[in-house]
Length: 194
Image (tube, rainbow, N blue to C red):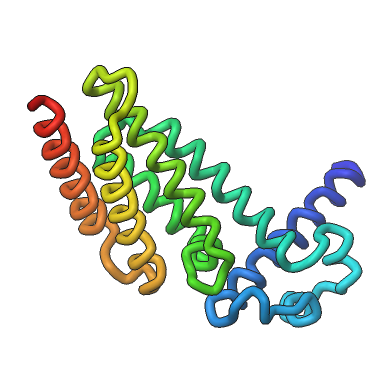
């Protein structure tokens, strides 16, 4: 193993500790009330090391949000056309594998931009899929309202689950959200055919 491999591993370990520490602090505190000193003391890393990687707490948060958004984007793109129960199972598994991060990003102590980004991504994929399924070249104004209602409802369920500590059984949640998904699609499709 070369020196660079050790350095890379050390950097990854440091960044992971900082991410985990921030996620943990944000469960109970607003991001604007968290200092670099508090975070670095919590994870036992020198402040100079923090500043070697990040400008400030907001920079760290933004990089964390961007990484999760990119990973979820990939998952959504790869699985959106799958049956609803499979699609949501994949999403919930990802969230469970990244509990601390997702708890931080879905919490009300953050910047709030993550859920907005996720909403936009889900809406885009929903519109794309519905247009494809129903052979529409573009979506009408009325349908955009259905999409908004549908997507925000799904995200509200996910957010409630995350913020309540992941206690509700995942399989039951997948069943609930998949039923809602299918019923919404059926209702909207029926209206489109009139």
